[in-house]
Amino acid sequence: AQTVTQSQPEMSVQEAETVTLSCTYDTSESDYYLFWYKQPPSRQMILVIRQEAYKQQNATENRFSVNFQKAAKSFSLKISDSQLGDAAMYFCAYRGETSGSRLTFGEGTQLTVNP
Amino acid sequence: DGGITQSPKYLFRKEGQNVTLSCEQNLNHDAMYWYRQDPGQGLRLIYYSQIVNDFQKGDIAEGYSVSREKKESFPLTVTSAQKNPTAFYLCASSIGGQSNEKLFFGSGTQLSVL
Image 1 (cartoon, rainbow over the protein chains, first blue to last red):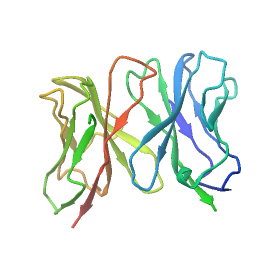
Image 2 (image 1 turned 30 degrees about the horizontal axis):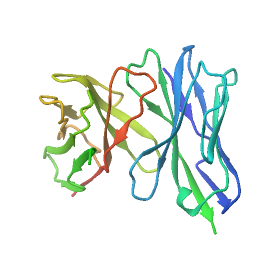
Image 3 (image 1 turned 30 degrees about the vertical axis):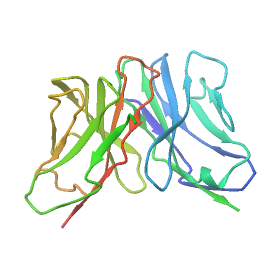
């Protein structure tokens, strides 16, 4: 079974600084998709960014980018120019080709942004 | 506006009682999901449905039941067999059939035991 691990329960960053959230996963599949979701205090889950495993280029969405290391099974999220609105719980998620539409989530990282 | 509506926002269950959480979507999505979130933990899949009149168990289906009689609706019943039902429940939907598709989430229901 696939597993997703986020080893940092909590992280903090100063406003305007950069922070990196870690995620590792375990799979025997060669083709899969990885996602980062954000859950602000409202508890509404929002997709931040996604990456196809067959693509070597790291995905980027404005201030959010990933560092995808397929061999190391690592998928970290970098947030540049952190803003107060970035404060949230961040979840890494995995979907494999044989998973159908099922997503497997990590435990989450609580990000605090200090003014 | 299109989206997913979950109700109620807060729900209380008495011992031995079944309760039903509502989830409605007007996004014309084929696939729908129920996740459970416990404090300090990630989301765990309870049930999912990829098409009307069909659904599959997720990782923690025991003590729960679902139905999918209409495309727009995917209610979750928490039965008395679920001994630890206190959690935050999230419903989601997706277009269906695409591996890179994103999930659209509702705003959740917090279930507590009296």
